[in-house]
Image (cartoon, rainbow over all chains, first blue to last red):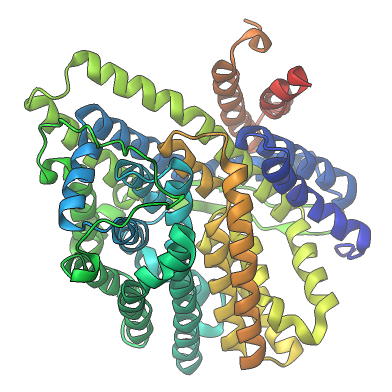
Length: 530
Length: 59
């Protein structure tokens, strides 16, 4: 027996995703409630239409919960850093000093929301750019809603080659890119082009959202320069060292954006009328005794430790040697859809994980501020209590979303969804190839997972339809980068550290439009290129 | 000890604990006894329904 591919099974597979988006976006349910409903429906569909066994579903639930642990390990310390900074008045200092270095508000938003978030994606990832940047943007006077939306949109381009090209490596491992050097460099180049396009679109959209045409007029030189460095630098480096093709250009762009702040064009504050800004920013009445370097201490430690550990091969290998994984047995559905036994599933190197770097940064900052008398005993209790209070809803939502994703994958629902879509589009498949990548990343919140899930499938589809393999694979991973932009888990990370849990639906609704337009544009480029 | 009477934060914490416990009990069906395995499913159902309780109560 094989997996049934018909309208009923395809619609059943789509139902959980449609329900999730509907409840989040239109019914404005919280992420916890919508993900619980989505997971429940995915399990019912798995039993009812896909012949799943209780053993199979149970194992997929366990896989989903295990996968969520590495994301929750980022959420909790990221909230902790936020609470520490808030307790000592760090955001007020950052707002005050950033206003001095970059007087122009739009350029401040570009510097933090686009450059800094992309820079953080270079060595870290796993949601760190959103969790860290959202509170910083609030600190400079950006409304919490936009403080979450801007980094989500503006750093998505860096997902494939960010985290030291982890997602790119996942694609390489899943396909014949690993054995064909010509195809490897050709795909890397096309991926650089597509994600570079996304980078420039995101920068331009940021200016548009800031103040429509006035924002574009004011921001275009910065978008041009930063876009050229980030997108052009990445494109160049994909042909030399894909591993560093986000780290190097984003570091350069971050330096250049501060230099742009000295230009006469950006020498005075331009904030009036932007819907993105609050009237009185958080730091307006700042009396924090911190210097800017003290306020940025947690982020210095975070970036310093991440870059040192990940780019020093000896240290990386030594710390990365300690891994934790879980073993799962083989399961199959009544239709013969087999999930092979996984003796080493979801291996995590905790000492090279972003969560560990965040814990180090939080602990060291706490110790430093404690020694200066800025955090007392009652302050520490407040920090820990607020961290715990904010972490629980985020943790349960992420765990339920990944449970839903694994149940859908393990019962064959995702396979039917992708193959059904591909079969229906036939010769026009190239135009929809990015959407498949987007779907994978939306469900799993990960560019890496989307590439693992669909890399091989996309290659088969390219060969089956006679299209260019390099173009389709580039569309897969670039589409997946788009999917991370509005995946519920990533959005939740931002709303949690920004203190606006419950507004996930409104943010997803706004980003859904951006994502669909970007994926359609990418699809058009891919269709023309194949 | 009735989680339905707890506040939303309490219910979410209970749901998270139930989901984690169910993942442990359901991860290896061959080596888990029938009682523990049934308990795993009960906890999974509870972890899915607890977050939805607020919606039911609101409506």
